[in-house]
Amino acid sequence: MAHPTKPVLITALDGVTATTTSSAINIENAKKVTFLFSRTDHGSGKTVFTVTASLDGTTFTAYNKLVANAANANTETVLRAANYDTGTANASAIYSMDLQYDTFKEIKVVATETTDGTHTAKVLIER
Image (cartoon, rainbow, N blue to C red; front, top):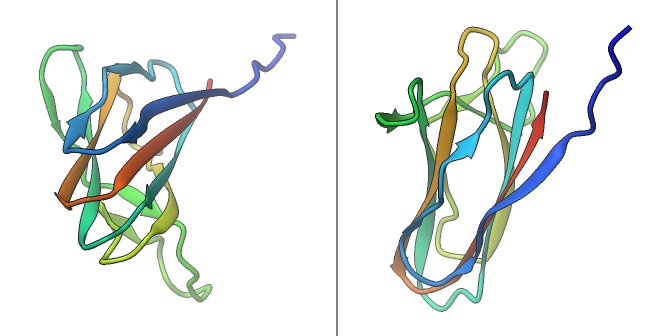
């Protein structure tokens, strides 16, 4: 019987202070991919976190099915989003990829800054 591997935590963006795109992160054969997006040192403006995905490691396109960590009633479906917008404050949020129907070779995380702030994105990958 195969033994499960421990999830791997990667810091994709580590306290960046400008609009930044991470290096490519291999998620091939991932069962779950979870993100922690954080903005600190808010003065004004906001940060919008997005994810791009690639089938071949060359062409990256916007991934628009991030699953928000949002409360809902049993009758509702999960909330999928194209991005996480911190609004005009320090904020953190957890999102995950909807891998029920998709599989990708690599992803990149993008933090788009308006005005200021410090931006961090962590990625937990379970294979």
